[in-house]
Amino acid sequence: MTTHPLRPVLLAAGRSPRLERVVSTSRLTRPVVDRFVPGSTETEVLTAVRDLLDSGRYVSVDHLGEDTTDAAAATATLDAYLSLLQAFGGLPVTSSAPIRPLEISLKLSALGSSLPGDGHAVALANAQKICAAADAAGVWVTVDAEDHTTTDGALAIVRELRRDFPSLGVVVQAYLHRTEHDCRDLAGPGSRVRLCKGAYREPASVAYQSTDEVDASYERCLRILAEGEGYPMVATHDPRMIAAAARTGRPADSMEYQMLYGIRDAEQQRLVEAGNHVRVYVPFGTQWYGYFMRRLAERPANLTFFLRSLLTR
Ligand code: FAD
Picture 1 (cartoon, rainbow, N blue to C red):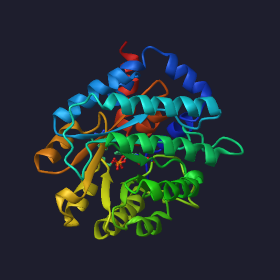
Picture 2 (picture 1 turned 90 degrees about the vertical axis):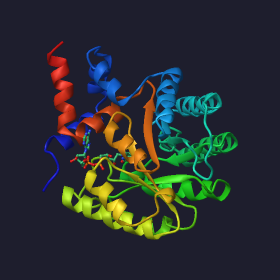
Picture 3 (picture 1 turned 135 degrees about the vertical axis):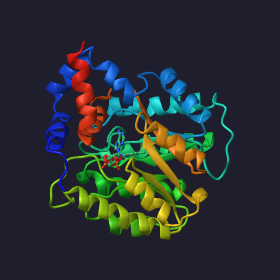
Picture 4 (picture 1 turned 30 degrees about the horizontal axis):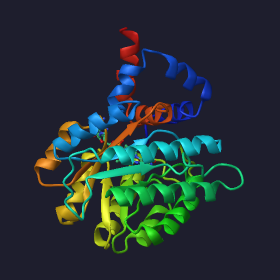
């Protein structure tokens, strides 16, 4: 079984500034984007966060943006996260330590990691400020995984940050050949690891290409994390992967399921009712294009939904 033929086309479109201008400026797109991105402002995202917390779910909020090419944009991302962390103070959160209901997710490329010259140092310094503010606010932080050319740099920054912030989480992508090895490295005591399949367009030299291979890798990585001493975060909407996680026998309070905002809401609630920790990844901001195109690429039904909404207006 291979992945959907439109996936590479949509992922390539997600990197096109010209298409981004067309799609982002069309007022027809917005209602479809709203399904996956609950708002462009902090106020809007906090409303969505409150609703999710009320329903017994946890959240991980992502300020949208990636591939930052100037230092001012990286500083703006830093400021957005610091402001969000402050605003989290107004939420009615009862912390059931050691699990933190509030989390933020960061893309290091939005914090400057791909700036020429001192990108690594800029991203590290920005991430340090965010981790310190999050720690003070009782909020977890997890570093997202981007395309494979960034994996070594991201893991190096995570290792440096974990010296001061041991609860820092990290995302690994099952489609990469290297990830089983990374999971073994990361499965130590207290290590929070979010396992996802992977959302970028990657070459066969570094990544499994077929659905079956990616799923098999996901299950192998899941077993390594479940048998380890860390805190596995099972990020998937796939019923087969969710069943595989349950089969590992890992106690429900020592792991969590994670899904994206707007996807399989009923399943999220079912998992909560069955006594599991469930965290919803909630993106917000104006730079939703890349995120949105990756969601379309994942599921042809999302694309049909998008096209139908354009045609029926
Ligand atoms: P898929 O292979 O997409 O779907 C498998 C099955 O799941 C489908 O056949 C269907 O049965 C079910 N399903 C999927 N979508 C739906 C739907 N909309 N409605 C109903 N059923 C559905 N990727 C990265 O590269 N880096 C990251 O940092 C990252 N962070 C993530 C964080 C979270 C919390 C999550 C949930 C995902 C993240 N991803 C990230 C995206 C991830 O890599 C996948 O691209 C995405 O989750 C789709 O894979 P899947 O496991 O859900 O299964």
